[in-house]
Image (cartoon, rainbow, N blue to C red; front, side, top):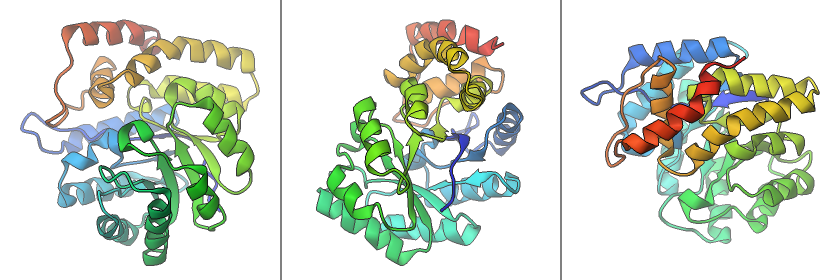
Length: 294
């Protein structure tokens, strides 16, 4: 089983003033993230606005990130779609590019039953020889990957982990204990990331890494080194900004945070709208100790 470790940014997709993908800005962004110490790359997830891109644009992003990656850096492609056939088609193209692992939530909008969720993921596994990191994000997808589905999928050798973004520490503890040695717990609830690390999350698919990579990578290293007192203090410094991100307009704030860090990546695509002046002011204030991280 592929061992998932470290901070893997759930990458934003830079756009230029005309709304096209800005690959020059993208290269600068990835270079800075690598310098901060990330362990891999997760393009075309929800932070990357994949649902607002064409298939050709998504493929271009996946190709670009694959070409940028170095040996030893983990690659996980977001290949989600609103229906199973689309997920299979996206996943086949990603596999052909060299992605052996994909990140998949339940198909959005449909709110499938647990039996349908099981059937969906098994259909993908049967169609494409890839590893799957499940992605449970009920506030966005409208349905949770519950114990019934996880019990049915846990022993498949290519279901390797679950990015847990429910925000429920109790559920994360349940996953960590119920599926120990079977499904890797991956941190996806950023404002309780340290708690998930404590309960066994060795990896963090992290949207905030786009605009606070130095800080989140430092937190990860501090925890792995066993300095829990320092890790708690670092999480406390990160918490306000993390909490603001989780309060709404997540992707817009990630991109604004990149601008604050001096690596602008453009605006989000419609229907995602701009931040208000008050939202920018609150996030700017919360980002100051992160920009000046020591």
